[in-house]
Structure formats: structure tokens, C-alpha cells
Image (cartoon, rainbow, N blue to C red; front, top):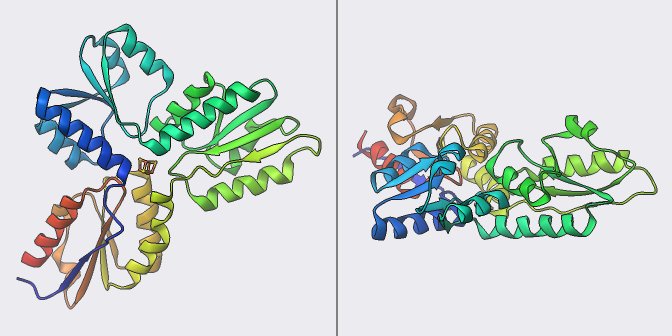
Length: 287
Ligand code: SF4
């Protein structure tokens, strides 16, 4: 066994929204043996494949529309009201694992839309086409305007009221930049209100991960390439510790980077399960 300190970042691993969705899926699978998931349950292909071996089948929207009289899991990102309507029409029983944080945001946006749709533009700072954002826009009958950054502010009319929300996994700095830019452009006689709806499960990881990266000579950052918070957190680690390596799965680790190294850190995205990090730790110790 290699004589080296290997520490797993305590603050990493799946967030409670993803853990909750996985538990719900596993519980249903134990009873039923098969369950459809509308989209991959988590942005992590190894975890998707582990659950697929237990009977979880990922489907897309087109396949969803072909189903009837079965059970379908709604993952942590949530879905627009149209999905619930289609399920009702087709006798589909939903196993709803929408994260409570996302659910609360959906409700706030739906209420805001009901109360002020005639005179206010509802704006969402988020990734166009991301599943959570599709679910949020669905609360406004498709009317909310999605902006990804300050370069897209020309989609807004600054002579009309603006109410800004954020997708839960966006960066706080990016949100602050957008707020400042809108304040600079909005006309004097209209309202601009903004709600910081960023999930702290993600946002709080940035300062913690910086401290963690500083404590180790080498850091392995384990995440599926599809995870957007994985990319952001990896970049943060890399800025602090240039000897940070991105791994798509534990088997990708290259032992040659450990020559002369005494301390290694393992961290990951909000979609990286702890078992994957443990597996990497064992591979390092046995290398
Ligand atoms: S990041 Fe936050 S909002 Fe998103 S699933 Fe996890 S806990 Fe829920």
C-alpha cells in the first residue's frame, strides 16, 4: 500500500437534492424492479449506469409521450406544469423527486407571474435549455426571459418593470454582475426587483474547496464532464492549486503525477457520489 495521505473533501459529494432523488428511485426499484426517469437522474454516467443495473431507465421527452399507465421519476431539476398535465392524461404515476429548493423557486416564480404578468418582465439568470430552467420558464407559460450573462441584456426592455430570479446553480458573482448592469440601465420611473435564489449547497462549496485545494500537493477533481457545477468547482481548485487534475471516473487517474507527493486531496461536484471518491482513494493507495 502506498504511504501517502489521501483525504476526501468532506464538503463534496452529492447535494441533498440528488441524494433524495436517488433514494426515491432506489426505494421504488426495490418494490417494482423497473422505473423510468425523465432525463438522467444525475449528471454522472457511472451513477446512472449503477442505477440502470437496478432497473432505472432514462427516457427523453419524446419517449415520455409514448408511455402510459406506468411510473416515471421526476428528477431533482423539476419539470414544467405541462409534464404533470401529460402524465395525468396518460395515467402515468409520477415519483416526484423535485428538489425542495427548486420546488420553492418554481412556486415563487408562478406566484410572481400570476401577480404581475401584465406589467413586469420576469427574468431568469440561467442556462438556456437546462432542465431546471425549462421547469422554471414553464411556471410563466413560457413568457419568462432567460439570460445567461450580461451580453444578453439586450433581450430586456429597460422601460418596463423587471423582476429577476436565478437558476439555483448559477454563480453568485455572475448574479451580482447582472444586478449591477440592470441597475445601470433601468429607466427611473420603473421598478427593478431581484431575488437571489442561488442554492447555498453549491455556492458554499467554492470558498471551502479553495481551502481544501491549498491543503494538498495534488488534487483529483472527480466529476462527469456534463456537470456544470463540476466545471466551475474544478476551475476554482485549479486556480488555487495548479496540480489539480480533472477525472471523469476513478480509473482515469494517472499514478505518475504522484511521484514524490505526500498529500493528495479528492473532491467532486454536487453530482459525484461518495462511493466514487472512496473508490479513487483505494486505487491511489493500492497504486
Ligand atoms: S444543488 Fe441545491 S437546488 Fe440543486 S438539487 Fe442540489 S440541493 Fe437542490
